[in-house]
Image (cartoon, rainbow, N blue to C red; front, side):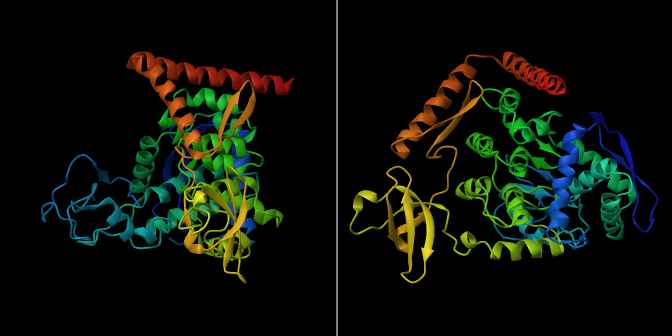
Length: 446
């Protein structure tokens, strides 16, 4: 394990001198870093055969946002993009304000592509790079420090990104300040959790998340990747992925490279040229989108690969759906099913119901997407005495009641504690998880 301090960044053309890269005490297991860097390299190189310099298309790094107040501008409380009352207004450094969703759409192309113009829609004043760009710079800087001697791939990518930022008019000092601000504003994953995911150490992860689950920990990141990104990276993590989804982990969240968890799971399919793995199938049933923002040729090749996967040829295949509008078997209306495949000759879908496991054909008008959610997962995983236990139910209503009872019992326990005892409990959870991980490492060494 190591603590990395400062770094030295400079553009690939040497402009404006070095930029100090404050990693602000980022702590991580080097064993995991090697795997993380390798997996990230796969995203950029395995499906391209080389490096990428381009990108294809948020929130701004350093913007001000408030959901509880309205930010007034020269136009009162009217967003200049949608011409409606502000919805969660965001104020740019120039002083103009817009709805968060409007601004996100306006600046979408520059969210992952540093070379796209990023200006205020009103006055064209240059805006700061997106959080995704700054997060990527932080990740590349970290990766360049741990890459093997003689391999400067990550350093070149880092310097290229810095050069692009300098060309867009940002100074070395501004870049330095933006990275400082980025690192201070996000919640970093504690150092041993990525390695625990890699080694499928579920108990350590659950001890760290706490009971009830601490949402900040669930949404924390390691070099911009969430815990769901990490579970998708490694094979045989379907149960752990299910646990995280049940607790509310976001399924359509992007890492600094513009990849969602399902993209990382599908990467393994690309590498093996085999069937889509179970983790990818699981994420798809939970509503994972195939939209990504992987850069340039990498993104183009990923799109080409997705077109070769039969289950993605139709938008409903392998999705979880609800049966609707049946004229005959009205008893099936409202039941959920998995769409197995589309039969073009009959213009029908082959589906299998989740509880009775009946298989039959239905039309497109008989299906409505009903992705799994934490409230409606159909089945439920728990982890007890070192083993996963899958709970199955005779109906969705029975499953939903089971989930409600679990949550209410957790709320009753937490309602009986004051804020101070809850905070102490969270600290104890971290200490317990860390102690367990250290003990595991010692046992492995012996």
